[in-house]
Amino acid sequence: MEQVLRIENLGHAYGKFKVIEDISLAIGRGETSALIGPNGAGKTTFYNAISGKFPPSKGRVFLNGENVTGLPSHRMVDKGMCRSFQITNIFAELTVLENVLSPLIIQQKKHFKPYGNVFKDRGLMERAMHTLEQVGLAERARQVVSSLAYGDKRLVEMAIVLARDPSVVLLDEPTAGMNPQETENMIQLIQRLAEHSGTTFFITEHDMKVVFSLARKIYVLHQGHLLAQGKPEEIRTNEAVQEAYLGRKSHA
Image (cartoon, rainbow, N blue to C red; front, side, top):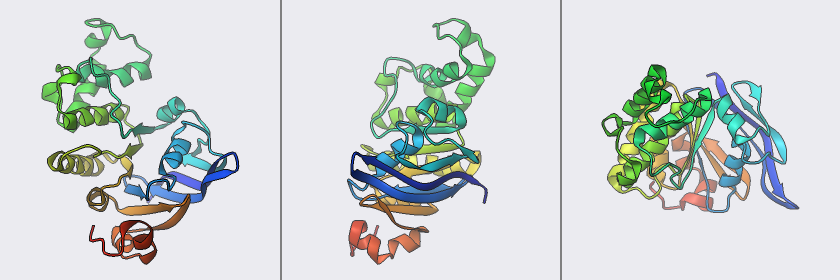
């Protein structure tokens, strides 16, 4: 399988305190993978270092074969890596459609004027509506986001990420705060997108049902190091992982 994301010996430290150290992994195009680990394992630092929030202290990041180590977040987006956050990051007072148009406007350096040229741009509108159809929100395109249920707001965020047609999507706790039905809907959406769009998803998630439902490969961080990696069934039965994270009697 063609590698879309490759991490080599990644490390990051704050002064003398090493948060993550010598993490290497490779993710194939169209593959859905997960990064798990207990609180304080270094997951957020790892995501920040590879997505451009700050450059890693050491190591290299390759995206679609290109060395993108240390590029700022907006450049990473241009290169094909987009990220969602645990806390919903959307424009609550804009409509669903306006939220999805926003990244497209930025990408094409257009101006956002209500009822102006953007809404008359057939290409932009078609891309935005196609994205909303992908996440099941096309019928709510003109609805103000603040009026949506929480689960639908998370779908808006997913649509914003997908609008730029990324090759890699980093999902940070995509089901955080969702009820069981919303969680199941999100699982099915990610499965459907991965299967039909060929998008590569790399998720971090505490809900093991979500992880084992979605991931073909799981990476386990513990105390800043990569403790284990493998297929879900391998991680489920790994004694070191059970001790560090899942619990010996876990049936997740």
